[in-house]
Amino acid sequence: QVQLIESGGGLVQAGGSLRLSCAASGRYAMGWFRQAPGKEREFVARISRSGISTYYADSVKGRFTISADIAKNTVYLQMNSLKPEDTAVYYCAATNIVSSPNARDYAYWGQGTQVTVSS
Image (cartoon, rainbow, N blue to C red; front, side, top):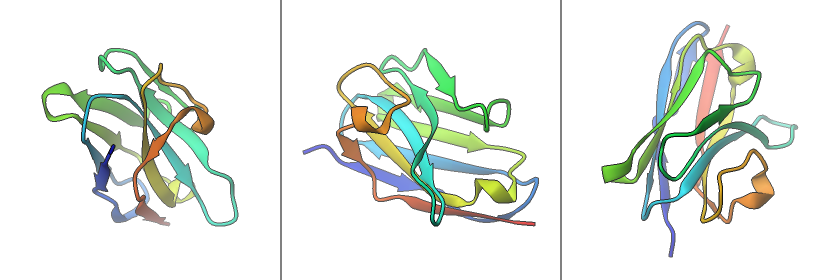
């Protein structure tokens, strides 16, 4: 059974930084998504199974960085210059196929971690 364990969420002031971690029980292509209250889940970033290829949503490009420690089967999301509109529950997701910006392509999901950015 695939397990994804997230950590690193919290409360931060606008302009601050947080790093999310997602420890997987195996090696997968991974993605980060987020869902704010009353909104649909949206794509944030993805990384290939090799950890080489990455892709970002326009809303976070230049501020967020996705990376992977292959040896630890762990994916990170470094979030800098945070804005109040980044407030959401952040989910990591895993897929056995090519990483994708589409949530429906991911079979496995973490429990979510809350990120709150105050103004």
